[in-house]
Image (cartoon, rainbow, N blue to C red):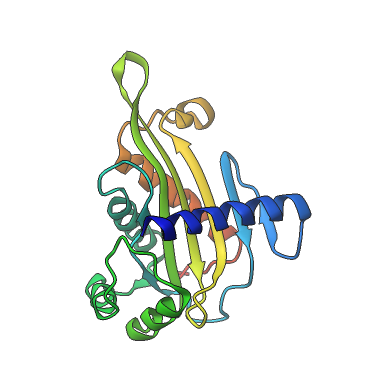
Length: 209
């Protein structure tokens, strides 16, 4: 499946380059920090409070990086908006029926089948591009994380919104003034919160309103 991951990453990078250079119809929005947000198409009109968070891919060398980020992102969705998430058991069952492993990249047709079987009006996928626990001052841990998260149409499997986000623990001391984050879980949680807040600002529903 390495070939599929390579093609996925290449396609994503090419999309970012093309949109940045041409300013075509999809809207490119930049948030603070090393982040990019692309709106290729509008989200579905209704029922966006029920989401299927599919297994995240892991292109980093960090063991279980995709699993960690998937669980953290799902937890942040629950804590920040009272979203209804498709149960992990139903997603695992759908993957097994299609003979997919969590680390596999589903095709668009397989994503449509998964969405139908778990009854999900919106799909969330993601990929860990870099994840490492570097060292900062006095040998403290300075985690670094680069992720990409997508919201997908369940009818086609196509990407509607894409958010690319890069951070390291010391960014928060230098630019946000509330202290360095020293754990990978803490950094993942903070970055997931930043992405969800960005989405809220662009019209993603707050389901506890």
